[in-house]
Length: 381
Image (cartoon, rainbow, N blue to C red):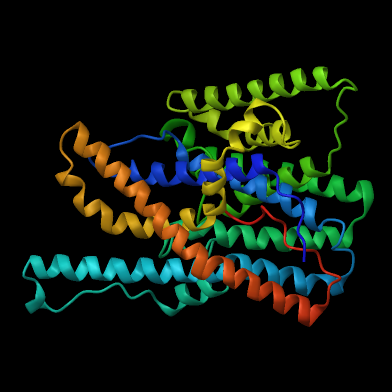
């Protein structure tokens, strides 16, 4: 079964975003070794990109209720297996670290203390509902909150595809994007108080679903927009280069401003949408940069990078206090990145890719070939 042609620029952008999220969480520890200011915003790029690609792959094929089961099976196969492995690995390593700490502190006589999540957290994780406002905190592997919201964004997308056609569908996508974006801004400003304390758009366990819907349906709306370029190739090339330079400059300005003007972060989904529009043709200088081999490799392993880096940080941060001096700190950072890539390659090869293929084969056998093929660069982050 052949998927849609791979947009190399999208793959590279997703890979770079996954690495920057991993570096953002690495820089939160003390003492900080690297700072990726407001790196949490790169999750919004995942959401916009996912909506763009899922819409391109499935909008024309989710035309009747019979097409829904195959779509959902494929989406579950894309998200759930690696998420469960990453969650179990996180809990296992957290317990190992806790027991080792208690042993070093001589606390064994008082009884061992371990992390044992309640049944409600396990059930919510298995059903991917754990970031739909059910809890007052991020549970277990903290990176999985976005996977929960994205799966139910898929369901909302499928429902609109089944209910609406033609211009009405595009309008439905746009209305969902505007509504969810408005709720996200309200929650950031009035619930979280981000204008004073920072962290605008940093919505996870509580309003994370609205944040996801905003980015996802913005991407879906942009995916449906058809843009006609100039007739002459030279003119089109200049237009692409200018558009890519402008979108990249706007993003850089946002990240530079966000420390002093927290409200700047509220523009993240919109600016990431403009970035994707500028590189969607897979042409132009920025698209070529994202198409470079190292970023393509990151893109291939991006989902594993995103879910496995919290597991690695649990163990790796134990050695942070020994990284004294510039060279030692640089080596400590390089070791973290290398380990993230090695582990992500392993989980992609042995968990993510084979399980995705198995679920796809099951969907094809059980529901036939009428369902859409797996988009080459779709999925979470």
